[in-house]
Image (cartoon, rainbow, N blue to C red; front, side, top):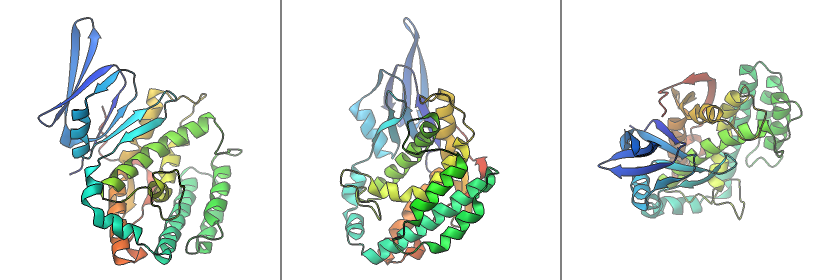
Length: 307
C-alpha cells in the first residue's frame, strides 16, 4: 500500500529518519521539546512551509528511496521545489528509451484523449458547482482531433474559466489565481514524483515542448485533473494572494478526494499512479486506448489523514 499521510511542517524543526521512522523535533519553550514520529510507510508527502526546518542529506536520501515527496514552500506560499528520487530514472532506462521513441501518431492520439477528458471534467465541474456552460463544453469534445491542431483545448479553457469566475484572467496575480495555482502545484508535484519513479524522462512531453521546462510530461498529464482542484478551489474565499494555513490544507487534501479511474473509485493520489502506469503500457503497446484517465466526482474524502 502506498503512503497516505500528508505531513505539513510549519514551525522551526529538526527532522530525522531512524529505523524507518520520521521524527520531527520542535522546541516549544526554552529547553523543552516535543517529538512527532510517523512511520515512513504511512507517508505520502511532506510539505515544508516554515522557516528553519532542517533535514539532513541522509534523511532526504531515505525519503527519496521510499518515494516520499518533499515539497518546499517559498516565501510567496507557493511550492518552489520538490525533492525527487534519482535512482528510479537510472534503473529504468528502457522506459525512457521507449518514451523517446514515441512517434507523432501515438503522441497525437494520447493528447486527443487527454484534452477530451479535460473538457469533460470541466463540464462536469460546472454542473457540480451549479454553473452554466456544461452543454457548450460537452459539444466541444467531438471537435478534438489527434494532437488538437485547432486548439480546442485553449478555446474550451477560455470559455470554462469565464463560467467558473466571470472576468477571471488566468495570468493575473490575484487571490483566485493563487488558490488555483497552489492546488494545481500540489497535484503537479505528485505527478512529477510518480513520473520520475516510473522511470520516465520528465522533460519530454506529449504536447508540451517548453525547452526550459524540466517537467513537460507532468504538464501534459495534469490536464484531466485540474477540474478536481477547481471544484474545491471555487469556494475557498481569499482576499489576498498569500494563502492561510487552513486554505493550503484544504487544497493539499484534494489528493485524498475521490475520483473514478479504470472503473473504480479511488483517491486522486492513487488515481495519478494508475494513470502513469497505464501511460507506460500505452506507449509500450503503441496504443492510446490503454491510457486510463480520471472522471471527476462530487467532493468526497477517502482516507483523510493529515498531520
